[in-house]
Image (cartoon, rainbow, N blue to C red; front, side, top):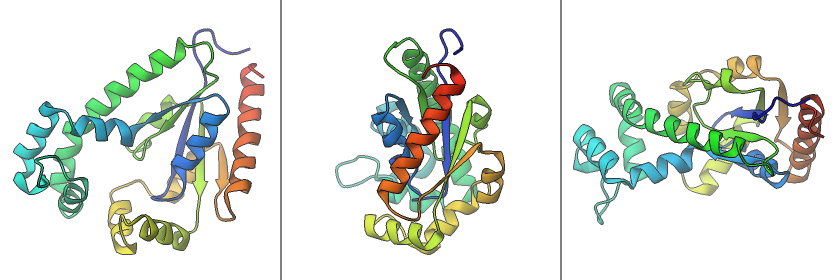
Length: 208
């Protein structure tokens, strides 16, 4: 049977632009709630207290013409300097993880929520893999990920490599996961895999 007052926590791992958020969205359609770390961080950057700390650390160069944090400028600065990235993470990560904890508690109290999905780019790096009852790796070939990143207009192949150099290797992430979703052959195949994995999780948790 499921554990009283605690819903299964599903963590999603994978490379940049591998489709982690697409997988999370499919779990949401099946009755899960998603803790989206990127959205939390985005919201935090709008708050005055966090903005002041970041400008204090990195200077006015991170601001756009309206005086808001420019996410592209911010990324370009910190991914070119490991010390600045580390300092930024010390500001942002505790706030993101604190908000994530609040959401997990909230979703555990909501009867209609079947499971909680953690869509956190640095899930393994911040030590949250151990918080998860199931870890899923989204496998996607590098060229597909590069093409997706270019189409989204976010970064090129070199920038993906730079960012992933600051993360635990994909091989090591695969090694700690319970399931792998193949995202090399289209959306319908991905959706089927999510449904199958979710059914297994619910069965084992005694919630099906």
